[in-house]
Length: 209
Image 1 (spheres, rainbow, N blue to C red):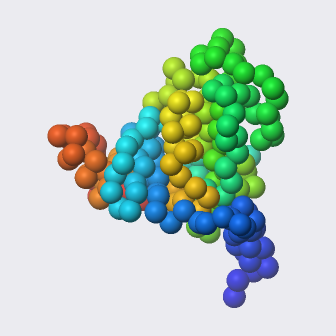
Image 2: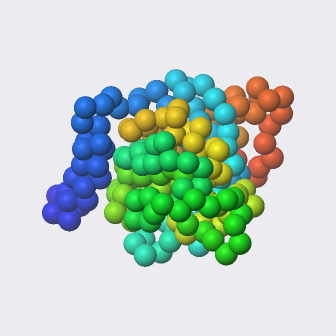
């Protein structure tokens, strides 16, 4: 029998998307696959790969433990979109604009900028993702994109997160995997279309959470 705590976590995971979707439609066409190994995100629409973006996941590793600053693995959805219309480099603190705008790679600066896509976990092991405030967001530290450098979130270059923000809506699925995009059907289609394939090892185990 499920514990009251488990039931509470399940309800909390659903509520953010329900509240955000009131008066708007759920995005059931788009899905993002984030590869920790490749440090890339593949946007998939109706089962077909659209484009890939370089990203940065946590420099502290993977997992869902509260306070760990890990990037959570598994299935998620976009629960809230924040920052539409904000200028490139607009700084956010506690999901509110501060009024400051900074340039990419500004020395000594590493705030959340430009856009925020707030994630909500859909698996039992990542049901606290929303409460941990794990986002897909812009970063001024663009020189670090392509390698693990975040504090748990999925970082993108400002121009890329703006493009993604325009393409996806609340409810769009986000799957975060350990392995290469080339171990997924959409990833293989993407690399085949580009005339090559990704280099990766341990194909059989690459997509295990």
